[in-house]
Length: 56
Image (cartoon, rainbow, N blue to C red):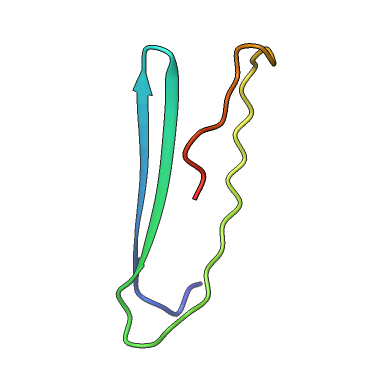
């Protein structure tokens, strides 16, 4: 299915008024590969109560 060796870490942090997610992919193979993701999170929230922080 995938001809490369890698590690994947998906971290979810829940706090009183926030939810944070982080996805880290590490190539542990001897050859390079391309990788991309599309994380879609759908949470019900009001415009007044929502914010986006920490985009990299």
